Length: 505
Image (tube, rainbow, N blue to C red; front, side):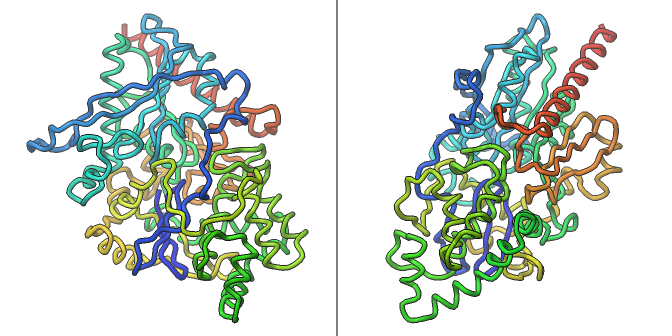
């Protein structure tokens, strides 16, 4: 999901990918660290490590909403399937579907252990569908260079097209499996969580319910404050240590001052062990922002390897590193090292790394069309430099990069958002909204119950879709309770579906 930050550069970043660029340069800094990001294996439960999935492809239509000749073109959409625990079509056993995010579907599958672990309990078939234009689900002959070449092709990349893809694939799959009466529950985290919620709203005849984890469906213009994102990150760090907060808050001015001194850039390069021979202060600041943002997002209570290998409670670990450092620059390096090099394998860091290990690049287009999410303003109390979010800057950059003008109110027109309680109460049911309050995206989430079947589960110590992760022996009680509550609610949906089906027959 994309968002615009306005510091010394314009920053567009998704829920999971950070893309920074200036108005005069197309060079991106930094998305992920330069080292390869390995699939999460060590954090899985023993039983989940051996759960396989089969890779399949579905012939998908290019355009669901028009009937001109090009609309009938097709592409191969990837989906992953696991039938190890499925009770089968004859028993009308449920089908659990993950609505894919803005990236490679295998990555999200590897980090959504909740579905694998609960499949035996529900005798569920598991299906993970890849979002169009990401991973291997590339239109126009599967050629990414062609598909991403201009806005006449990227115009087919949108949330509404993706939802229609999911509906079409699910209906066809159920038909082929002779499982037309098997209930479908959709799952998703982050942007995938938004899609899961929207899918239930738009396609209630296809899915009986949705678990929308860390889904900021209210993070749009006119619905939330642009500075809520950075305010939550600030709270996370300040809550650990006032001194930690003050050092980070004062670091931006310090870095710029050091960079202006004779030999200062070399001091920064050596202190932070940067691979680049030539750097500037803004690139280093962007590198540090990435560390603080992503660590707050993934401030999990157990060790993780979702974005990078990190310890349990990494925000706390960062602040401890800051407290132990000898000088301010050294303190900042030690803290950033928790995110970028906890495994201890990196010898230096590339500030200008533009690799895309999880195929997240398509989000730039979505951030310039419909996903206009005001995030990045910073108030006086923020640990980031004080700034204001600017829609005008977004327009300028999107016109420059894609020759396209954003439609800032399309998402709320299509899916709703204003008066969310009244809207959803009238039009929807059977959605779980999970949010962890340590996650900066929770500021745009649904944080209170709307009805008996529209349930908000809020975890004070939770981070970004932590409920969907594989369980571990070290999981705190509150996390176990969250998952147990979700299982009970989903079970009630399925039970009600069978009752309705029986009474109908």
